[in-house]
Length: 265
Ligand SMILES: NC(=O)CC(=O)C(=O)O
Image 1 (spheres, rainbow, N blue to C red):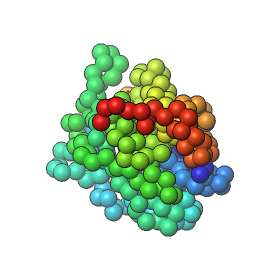
Image 2: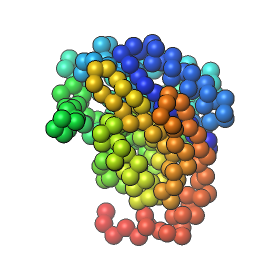
Image 3: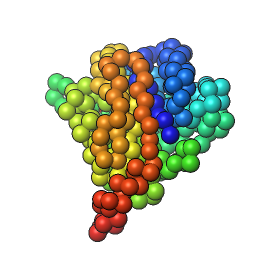
Image 4: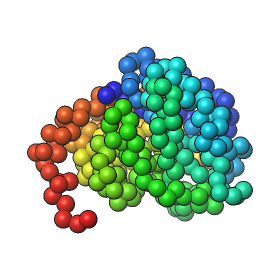
């Protein structure tokens, strides 16, 4: 399977963001990708705690990507968007995955919320405006069991171990990782999740400045189950592609059976 990671710089203009995302998905389809992955918060990254208009699962955001998947004949992992939440104060941070037929194949709500205060660097309290998801998800994407996660989830290895135990061969991480933490942690964490779970990791990030004061790290990448970086996007709004070889994954698991050798549940 050929995958494309799509790197965006989403702003406070949903229609603009969707237009840029569509252009990258067209590029992914043109180079033969079977699956294209967008980053966290494709719909909106701007001033204010949340998008001006959160949407239901079957709203315009979903319809746009269902149509795009169908028109391009592509599996589309639509990163994440602001889904209408349980009350007026909170949304969900939600992933939607569409099949090449345009059917909604999977949904996932971000479980771990980014509540972090690093003096002078990062001040973010995601739980003030977002409610956490409760459910882990291994989706069937083109016949491959694929574990879903979003951004800050990456720091919680027990989530990915659960996904691996539940059969995942690919782990997808749409993100808007901060520049301050990303430059030291992003690649290390992604490669660790790939090696320890013997899975492909497909990670699509937001890149650059977002109003009013957030800078995202980018460096979208695809990593193999040995921990090797197969593809990495440059610091731009663009795509990077790589081939996933499931036979190679099974060979790695056979030769170095660390997943099978686990002693703790
Ligand atoms: N933005 C996030 O959700 C996570 C992040 O930037 C980090 O973990 O660092």
